Image (tube, rainbow, N blue to C red; front, side):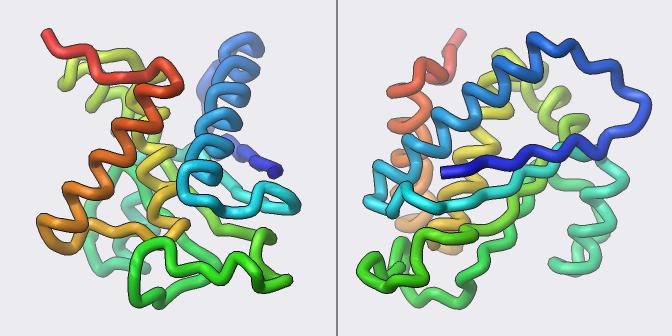
Length: 166
């Protein structure tokens, strides 16, 4: 499994040790998501773009017709699945490029503060949320939302990123 991270934020000073710890955390979360749903790990590629509110707003307007920033967008290579995790694991083309996840770090910072937890936890949550979308999960109705949220929290808890309730 390969996770490619591109940081498109301009004018942001990034500490190398933070970048390394985030890379490791996100790779571990990607592995955990893939293993949880039984998706092949070999030769799987995921790209993550870290951006700002303005860039994600433009993407949100273009692809979802919602002209405002959002926290995370996912673009799966295999769209139009009828049911969650409806991938054909025995298909020789499976396990290649899974898709792209775009996260607004600006929004993640605000949400972390609003929810009273670390930026690391918020970034982890947004990444897992995006990964599950790439894997065919959605939250269009309450049943799907509950199933997806339970899976998100299970993966995060198993990686030590559970929500701290105050």
